[in-house]
Length: 114
Length: 116
Figure 1 (cartoon, each protein chain N blue to C red):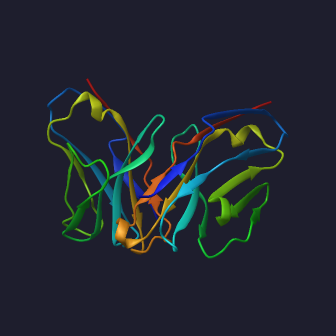
Figure 2 (cartoon, chains in turn yellow, brown):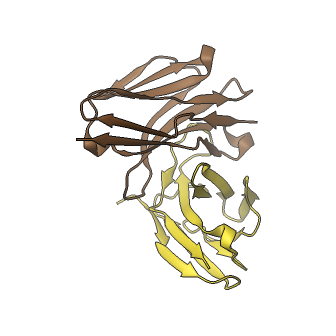
């Protein structure tokens, strides 16, 4: 089944404790992206990657890191989480780099930083 | 800059009523793409429709229909004869292509509550 998976789905952590949210897709997609969803703000892009070893900042990259060592994986790293990073996070992938390509979203990771 | 506005924060209707969700967008590009996504209470994002800027034809899919009007920069979504299962958050989104990092710019979302 074609899908984007994320782990963990739920995470409660404390300020400053490094964490990684994994994202994997099995569709051989070139494009992958991370978004965060906050009430009243919709979804905002954090980072994106157009191919292996190619990553770039989205609209809200502060406090996050990513890597793209393999085509299928695009982990999101929070080196020192803070309470303002409490949010719902979505990973997405797309088979093309043009704007008309549908982006497939993972199930979401709900992160709480205490 | 690109921007999407969904002015309706929350709408409540009674089952079988028709409901229209508004979406207004801003972009300076001549080529762009518009999307609608549904987020049911379970939290996942479900793709509903994609429209490119050169195709102003309205679209109907079952009880769903979309009205795209470039003259007013709007891409409204109508649900006919709403059902309880339509209760969800609906997002309108805009994509401008590679120069924007293939980014989807989302509106704030509209919460739709359909009561039986």
